[in-house]
Length: 300
Image 1 (cartoon, rainbow, N blue to C red):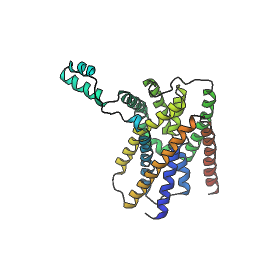
Image 2 (cartoon, rainbow, N blue to C red):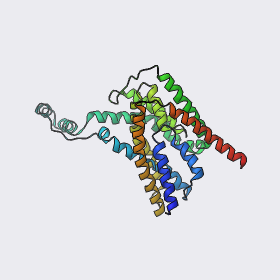
Image 3 (cartoon, rainbow, N blue to C red):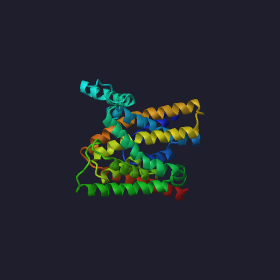
Image 4 (cartoon, helix red, strand yellow):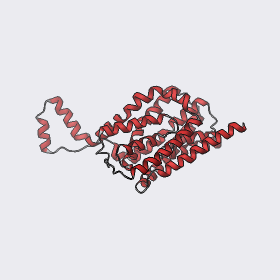
């Protein structure tokens, strides 16, 4: 891999790390970036790379929120609790001992909420993923989605000023709320909508605070993006060249580092501000993307 391809991979990692977590559509940015910075790789590997690079973003969430996500610990049981467990049948005693000693029940409940929120995507979106990528992954759809969701963000934030969030912590989030947010995530299969944008909008609409909506979006990305990367790996196989491996590692590492910074920025930003600035940004970007490609087609 020469220095130019390395720099391209670095730049793509930076774009992925920023746009994956901010509700501004990583797909929209990647389409625009691809017009000016093209990796010297096969079309199949580029398609694979643009999905698997998200693993770096996933790892950033895991590292930053390890304390909230890791559902195991080791603790000694109080004598009273041991006495209660000892009265149970052998099989039940073993299960209860394991659960009480090693499992953080609140975090297991959080993971069950995450899995419940993934159900709509698995059932509704996954079967049509290839069809949607083939038919809708173009600048027209991406531009319209950027603009429409930008307008929705502004409208919802204006509407949200008159409401108080009913869910201000992940612990108080119900399974119903998690499922409803998962339904909004299905909308993100349309390129340009933004997965984080869809789920954040959904969270706000169903009554969560901005912070809860953002954090649940981060956590929801772990199984969704890991699953998408695994499917691409199975489809692509393991026939990588040395240059492709280096490009992939570079993109993932850069996306990881930049994602940490982007997530910290977003969490700090939404404590004092709303999402309207991202709405305006989406509108401007959508107009620029649409204008650029229309102008290119007319001139070309």
